[in-house]
Length: 543
Ligand SMILES: Cc1cc2nc3c(=O)[nH]c(=O)nc-3n(C[C@H](O)[C@H](O)[C@H](O)COP(=O)(O)OP(=O)(O)OC[C@H]3O[C@@H](n4cnc5c(N)ncnc54)[C@H](O)[C@@H]3O)c2cc1C
Image (cartoon, rainbow, N blue to C red; front, top):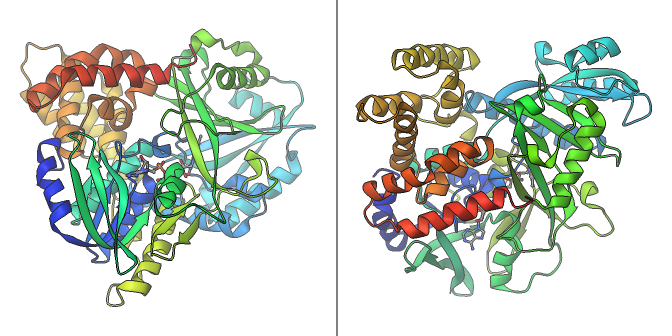
């Protein structure tokens, strides 16, 4: 069965007909990782997501598979070690999507940790994270730092450091994990909201859910229910009973996107801000994105946007450190805002709260997991499923195998493999009369699925504009393989166009709505148009 909108009713029927071992609520990276771990140990697994996959925090991050440098500052050595080795594993599982990138850290006379402490700190970091020798941190002189990034304000710069990071696309990583879980037999559907629990002998034995695409209600039966609701974790816990003891603390973080030519950083850079925080500026295709903020949040979980104040904070930070840039509000093309589902600790500020994950179990058996990072998704999943296996399925494997399950069908062995494939894609693009510079975007987004996209391109009517033929081919790929239900799923989370090429997203939104209607006549065009408008306006809310 293709993982496609046209098969929704068949998948929904499966969800209500079968008895599952594990049902996961939440299709962010945490839930996706848990579903993959469970199904790969032979457990009968289901996952439901109330919106689109990764529509919560997992499409709103800085998009880095960190080694956890900030944990070093907080002296959480165990965490540095775990996340450090994890990112190497995640890179190996999806080398086209988790890409090594050197991060420049400018160092100042009287700011941050200073030159020598940073040098030692990064050495410890490399050691704990097991960074390969060629990727280990390199300290730079003042002159080297300023020539590495000529836009930097020269005053007070003492030197710099280059250290290893990995960049990714959080939503793509989530959807690849989901697809892998589905290919192993998990039953997964988006736009299905868990509403209330079903009990048997005082224990949770399933949930009642509604399908947001048609309002249908269904009951899903499962021995174990896992709450991976991210920022919604406490709302889901509260369906069972009022939350007592440890609870979530939401902090908001935003990113802004500007054309790369307006902020032409030569490489990713992590710089200090006056208030003691640090901000990333990361080049990506035709843009540079910058973030993040960290402020307490008590508003609507379903409508988190960047405000004018948030954007001004980041513009100010950039203009202080890179004065020649003189970024203005008008330069900001798009933005996104997300919530960190952190665990509340009395008396700590937003930035001081630990990023560690925690598992809560209720008397009736609900298992909830919150906190954490993209980087730790596999370990979080392992801990949860170890617990589930121990309690309920003693014959299932006590060890996870996800460390060697490649994410995507035809996967790459390493970066060299990716580079060779990208060369072939480049040649193919030239033959097709398309600009070869889009090869990177295509390969990072679709991996070896790029060939399928280009096969479709070749079959599209020749008289359509090549640009539309290309985006239609991408859309068809996502429609058939990635459960695109609405056009904004594609524009925001399958391609990132709403963030990184908002003009293109706007330009093609309506033609893509028509295409979706052709692919599935049940599509409501007016609803699609309204959703796209809403998605665009939340990216430019601050304007
Ligand atoms: C600004 C910012 C920057 C960050 N940067 C990084 C970074 O660079 N690197 C890194 O490693 N981490 C980063 N993080 C952390 C990381 O993004 C999060 O830890 C991670 O995405 C959380 O994933 P999740 O699956 O737990 O939550 P979510 O992605 O929010 O997933 C939870 C899902 O549950 C669904 N759900 C809720 N209720 C229900 C229900 N009743 N029924 C069905 N579904 C439901 C929601 O719709 C949602 O999609 C960042 C976080 C923020 C906010």
